[in-house]
Amino acid sequence: MRKVVIYPGRFHPFHKGHKSVYDYLVKKYGAANVFVVSSGTQAPMTSPFSFADKKEMMVALGVPRSQITQVKSPYQAREVTEKFDSETTAVIFAVSEKDSERFNFKPKKDGSPSYMQPLGKKLEPMNTHGYVELVPTATFSIAGKEINSASQIRAMYMNSNDEGRMNIIAELYGEPNEKIKRIFDTELKLAESILRVKKYAPLMESSFGTAFNRIMREINELEEMVEAENTPTRRFINKASEKPRRYIDQNTVKINRLVNQFIKWLPDTDKTGELDHISYEYLETFLQDSDYKSIWERLSKHYSLDEIKNMLQTDLENLLKHSASFYQPIDLDDQQDQNLLFRVIVQNLDIPDES
Image 1 (cartoon, rainbow, N blue to C red):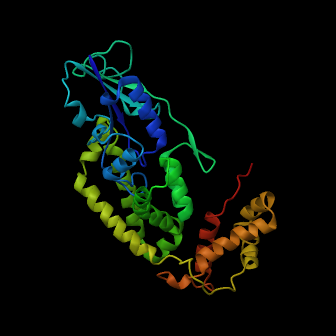
Image 2: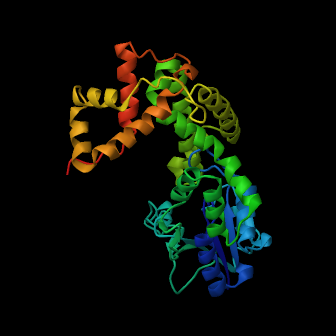
Image 3: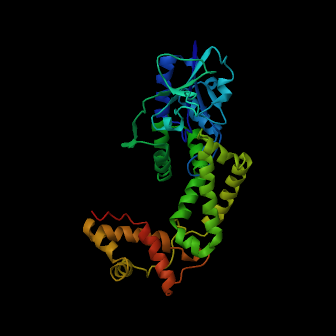
């Protein structure tokens, strides 16, 4: 009986860790029998890359184009399985232990075995059962840091300068690759914008009110719908069907447009600004004589005064250099604006736990 192996995933991004799993499967089952599948579903924060983007990453690492397939649901992959004789072919889904939770192994209501089963020695054809094989998760490092997730890679990339970004690409794909770097830069731009908006959430709420809350709600809804499309359980499939694919596409465009509108009101930290009279001492006094006194005590316990000063000064520079670029400029003589400003500063500090 022929064995067809499906290696499914979101792959945001596909990287050398995934390639090592693919190589493991090819060695075990043969190159002609292993298919890498992914959907084209996108959401700005968790699923930024298109299928075409991910295919370029796969090909750059040596996966043959013939073995890469776009599917509607990666953990069903009917677009691949329907090409084979269901009576003479066994289908195996190769996933990590974490992703195996996406499959339901519980018996049916009548007590008979579920369609999906853990891989064993005896296999039935795919018209009777499908199987799940647990594959090892490859560990690797980027810039000396052990990588545990795709979200970690995306965060590391967004927090790096241009040179650092190319170094990350080189470590992920074996060499500097301008085309893939352009993909990362383009597709992660919206996520970067959303993160900036979220960082200054109190200021955005103050300036935009319900408009800001609506865009944040739509972003969260979009992420949940993408999760639904990638989870092969009836509850999530039903949830995803409530909003058609077109809604996701339209919402992605709308979110992009609205976030860009918000972004233009954020502080521009690349230019010099005014408000130099807002000093570290002013903020220090505020912390010591306000509801934030406990935060000051925790900072003092774990950091030197110079370290605290650097942290606070950085936040001041990021937030105050261009208060005039906010939709409603900050009035430093207004107590409400002052408290709002300090809330934003404090929430972005690296404050140690009480322990």
